[in-house]
Image (cartoon, rainbow, N blue to C red; front, side, top):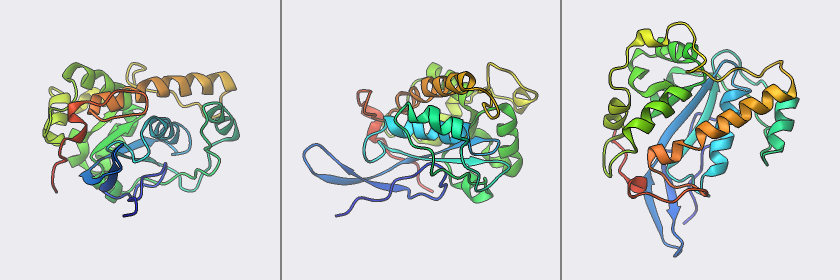
Length: 230
């Protein structure tokens, strides 16, 4: 049986089921969490975050399907300086082209992580129903770290409700460096390196927080928890 397609950075349309092959060469089907990164243009922060996280995952995605989108542009490449910095991390972003966010991509995602509060506001403006599953990356990591990973068989929507307990839409008004990853576009190499390092640190926590397995982290009991239906 052939392997089901994996998500690739910048492609919001992905399959909800992947083929998982164990070390004993046996194959099983399981649901995956569809994670969507969002930034302004879809050419810097969101594809970098997606690529860094994808690098940490096993060959079949470890229960995560990852995509990145932008709010303003389509078909834009990552700047050469960003491609160069990412190459130092063993990642080739040269082929990347930005993909604009759509209502379908927002509806299809299980978890949406923006780089700034503005990104959260814009996503929720597209679809108010997306509020419970849309956070800034920093806020999600901070909140999820307090709650811990989903329990085995816990519905993702229920877990996200716990993560977001007490949130108020007014909290994403304005801007706050504690909630936001700065845009490196137009900056010098050092600024790009700082952003890439910050994103790498943040996304490195996501597999543990979601209870999935990566190449660099041990598996957890919740790695194979059932995904909600519908």
